[in-house]
Length: 254
Image (cartoon, rainbow, N blue to C red; front, side):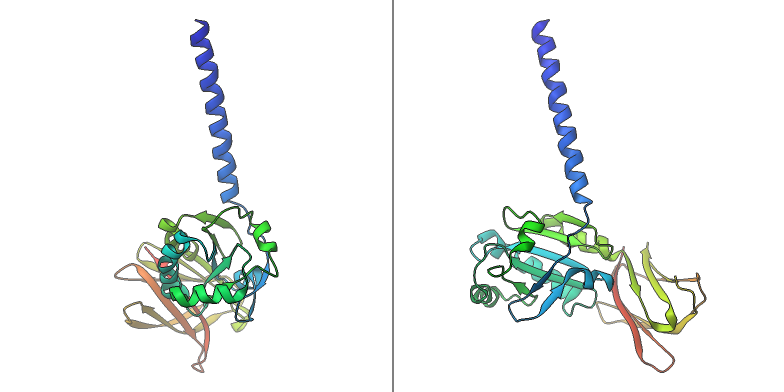
């Protein structure tokens, strides 16, 4: 009986520890991303919260130029950049070298592995490494426009990007309105979340290049639901009556 009681006690402790660890990991996954500014190896300064405030998703890759796994995973990260970002209009991918090597070595890595997204060295400024508690590489973190962050494995990193893109809010100065863009099953929903009317011509383009034009005229709080034949990534562009582009973005549709 004593042995049986001892086993039960040990099991209870193990279950409690597992629960605490699971809760801790869940809480960590729901954290707000620490803000930071960093200058890439080309001399361009990027500020995280400036980008998320514009409704952009930011994928942060912590890597090392000496990491074989990082090199192997590079084509996957590059594909996410070319598919969802590329110009940084709705998604950024930032590669941050976490071992503190000089920028010239980061540049060699970029050349050797064909990286086209911004890369950052940390030899002169490694604060971001401590902000994100980076103890090993590679690590991948997706920061959504609401500044929430979640770590992902390379195998499901794209899913993390899609999750952020599924509900994207982009502020527009056009007519002091805010265009809210969400997706449902085979539908893109455009909502005027501002106080002034929102109107213009709307173009929706699939990754295959097929473009459809709609007339958008939304009063405050009004929604327009557009049905699509297939899911996937779509680019939307809103033009005013003067044919000037006033809003553009990407959204993933299931």
